[in-house]
Length: 223
Image 1 (cartoon, rainbow, N blue to C red):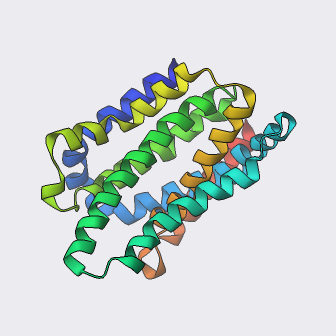
Image 2 (image 1 turned 30 degrees about the vertical axis):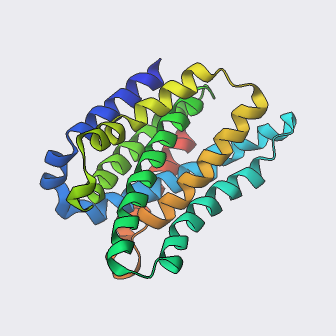
Image 3 (image 1 turned 135 degrees about the vertical axis):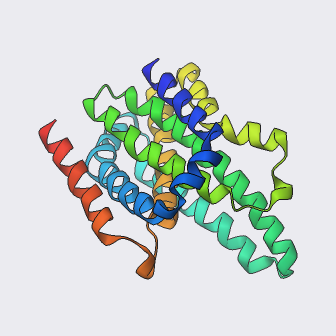
């Protein structure tokens, strides 16, 4: 139930994302860099080691995690390589961004519930990068072409995190499927964090990324 409450709070954050994004947009790079440092560190030193437990239930967690990572990458690159018309490409990318945003936050809600089922104190730590990522992705979504933003579209996108959490909560997954879906979602979120949460070149704030890494490492070590 705690995970559902946090998922609902993230959904409310989506609803007010327009106001929030206008206020803190100038800090977008700092937020994404800090969030990347926290989230990637948390995956590598805490969540990924927990995935190894899935091998006991014959869940191919590393293969599934790789499929999640590669699947999101291919879906994006396919459009760039196969859509030649520039105007059509922009529309297709807007649709993909909407779909990617929906799947992204659907998985965040799903992973949120699955993480809390691990019954670890570090489960609460994942809330911080999820909140920052929600703010960051909401700012990015504001720049999608306006005609793609119907009321129904907005409603579906805003509730995606809570829908993912509800599905995970009521799914009642057996151990094999629990670790399989967790690994798939984690692989996809790893790709998203590397692509969107690690700004390339001079745009990224290395200091904020390093601070996010140190903070997460310190908290996990203390716990």
